[in-house]
Length: 407
Figure 1 (cartoon, helix red, strand yellow):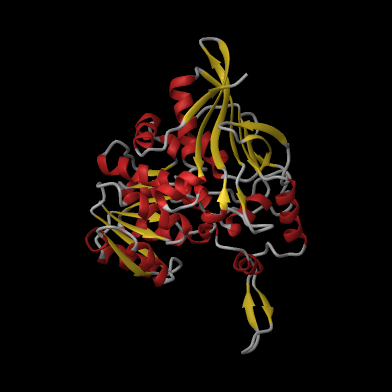
Figure 2 (figure 1 turned 90 degrees about the vertical axis):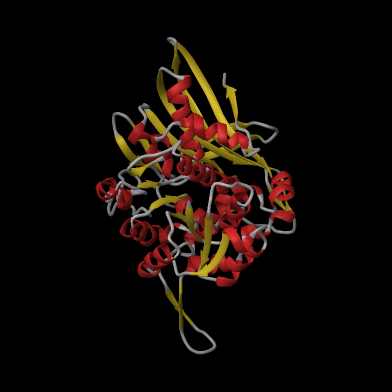
């Protein structure tokens, strides 16, 4: 399998380090708008001249992406960019006739008049609009295949197949005890994406209502995370799992809640109040005249790159899926989870825990697609495919998952 990886940031670079230890890829082309970043990711790898190459590529230029896919004879495009670039990459892969995998889905837009009650454009809607064309192409578009969404959806499928007869609620819960020395505020993941998902109206699914929205940071609850992380307050956040899981699995309710903490929430609210979360460009003075910039891009530029924080980070991050239902007519409640210790990921891969945990899952998926253990046609979420092969291979990668009976 020959793969074009678009995006050589923290997650993309972690992907290259994981892939380098596996033999299933014939060649990986690492592409980024910043060629030096793609080059640095490749130069750090063993056997770089044989299995890896670097390319400058603008992810927003659909024609250039199509050309790169064709010239490098790629079988699949792996999207490791932020959600702004999903659709040009998604369309380029479809037009070129290659498979596609991403970790975040096309952007949402709030309802024009009732943003905190009704959905407007939902996450992934633009991709699912092309599902028929993807099915006709005979190619796989595997969407939302990171850790959350991604592994969390695999957990949901595993629970439905092997742990429950009927499911009442599927709740993805994410929490960590990570700290970054020397910074008062240093998010461990892309602040651009974090602002997008945390300040948009959260989506909830209920069987009797379908998808609907609430106000940001609603329904706070304290969830006790495993492996020493402990209790963390979690709140509703917009996330792809809520839009994906009900398409393939039957549950009365589906939610996503993120452990943010009061301080983080307060800072996000301040950014919103000041208009610094906006992606609309504004005009500011510059040395050579007026410059048009996005406030959110300015915020991102002022904060440290999450990929560079590993040496200053301590603690663990946990992604997991809390499932409630019945098995053999008895109530059951489990939490399926995956924990990564930053000290381990830095020692083993030189990548901080959050980006490594995100990166390992699409690599596992690529290997399953390359062997045929996973296959399908059309636009598919991770829960559309069998869970057991994925979980077994994830463990083989040296990163086991856990199951905790609740209650």
